[in-house]
Length: 150
Image (cartoon, rainbow, N blue to C red; front, top):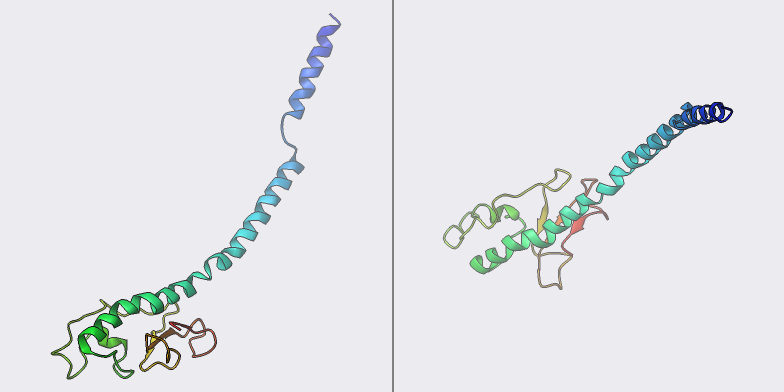
């Protein structure tokens, strides 16, 4: 019968050790909170560059889909005065040749500013495009952070 009490005490001590202590639980909760803080704090860094990518795709690809057919129909790119609006609505006096709309609508850039357009371009002078399309970027003014088709 000497073996029985020691067997009971052994099982009893194992039962106490099978759970987590309050300090261990608080430590794990603290680590989770720290990781969540790091992840939430970096979400802006993870998604922040997407606005620039969207603007870049628009100025380099989407506008081209409207500007090139416009040039084929009209013989030239829209003037600076006509702007990208010429891809949506026929410019005054050009209704006979115009076969648009070449784009369904002119979206705003990711910062809610209109895209800028210039023909003849000053940045694409020697390029095949001949026109400039750009977003003013996050600051909303013409500066070094502009995103263009050049």
